[in-house]
Image 1 (cartoon, rainbow, N blue to C red):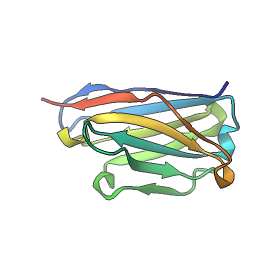
Image 2: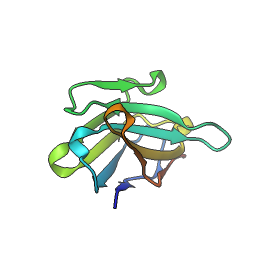
Image 3: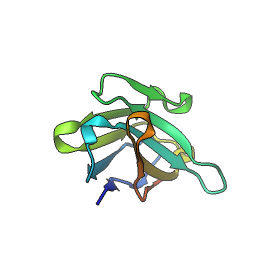
Length: 118
């Protein structure tokens, strides 16, 4: 059974940091493009960051550039999102996403809540 399990969310003060983790199982993790999305209440789910299969190429939405870093450890079937300099507007549910070659598959985690508040 395919699973993507996120962890690391929580409450943090503005300017603080969190590291989200997502562990995949039941599929070839090393062959998948891994992405992080987030969803703010009342808004559409949006792509935050992605990382290529070997981890050499990364992409970020403009408003997280310089603050967030996506990385992966294929040996551990894990993708990370290091979030620094967090702002209240970063508050959202963050979702892990895996996409297979030619969209042979697409899997989603159940999300982890990140709340940035003083």
